[in-house]
Amino acid sequence: MTILADPMRPEWYRVQRSRKDTADTFTLDLEPEPGVATPPFAAGQFNMLYVFGVGEVPISISGDPTQPQTLVHTTRAVGVVTQAIRALKRGATIGVRGPFGSHWPVEACMGKDVVLVAGGIGLAPLRPVIYQLLAQREQYGNIVLLYGTRTPADILYPRQLAQWRARFDLDVDITVDRASDTWRGNVGVVTKLILKAAFDPMDTVAMICGPEVMMRFTIMELLKRGLRAEDIFVSMERNMKCAIGFCGHCQFGPSFICKEGPVLRYDQIKHWFGIREV
Ligand SMILES: Cc1cc2nc3c(=O)[nH]c(=O)nc-3n(C[C@H](O)[C@H](O)[C@H](O)COP(=O)(O)OP(=O)(O)OC[C@H]3O[C@@H](n4cnc5c(N)ncnc54)[C@H](O)[C@@H]3O)c2cc1C
Image (cartoon, rainbow, N blue to C red; front, side, top):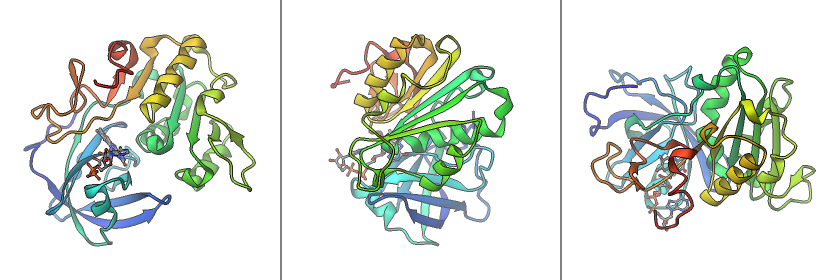
């Protein structure tokens, strides 16, 4: 875990590249200003991105943990700050605090099958896991990526997905809620893909990221297939201000998402999971 000198002080980065992924989603590559050392991060952690005069938001790191020099974030522009981030041009300066939070149990599932289930932009916080698994492919059993989006136009990283699908050592299955005229793939919710996915439920770790309703139904399907609750991990989102456990905005049951999360083990949160007010 990285110890930050002053976790409340942003370091300055420059936008190296900004590319549009879908109608409302974009990916930024950030490089540190001279004299700033980019700290290592673990798959699943997030940074606080700060736009001068606008505000700060938590965004997961979507890049490759083995190449931490360039910080990569995939963001959906939903409101004031994320729209301001989208407007940043190449060369613009942005503040970054982090990395913060818990991470996916990538090391701990060596020797096991791994199932990743992503919904919409939930693929972004899981992408670092895929990089890490593929970098040490021989250490894992079957690796399955199940991905669902609303429409084909909402699919993130389509070229990268095509490359992953072409591999023999990674099972990628994609589905959309609503097909377009040219779509020849699965139609329906992502949970439908779980039944036919190739993994040994007694020796599998599952990592899920997406809207909470999608995660809830995914967990139900995985439990039905025989996975243990302690082998299921989810990434939770709650608005936050400080990211270091002071402000209390991101409280979830007895946990703070910024410290104990965002990645949490299902059996440890199941009493609070799915309660709207929590
Ligand atoms: C740990 C963590 C990791 C995150 N990682 C990512 C990430 O990798 N990529 C990413 O795009 N977002 C991510 N988010 C969500 C992101 O932080 C919020 O979308 C952002 O704070 C919104 O700020 P804003 O100022 O743009 O919108 P606001 O002005 O605060 O909100 C504007 C409107 O959008 C709605 N809104 C806010 N957040 C969302 C949302 N997530 N989805 C739909 N509507 C929303 C609000 O209810 C409000 O109506 C993460 C959140 C957490 C807690």
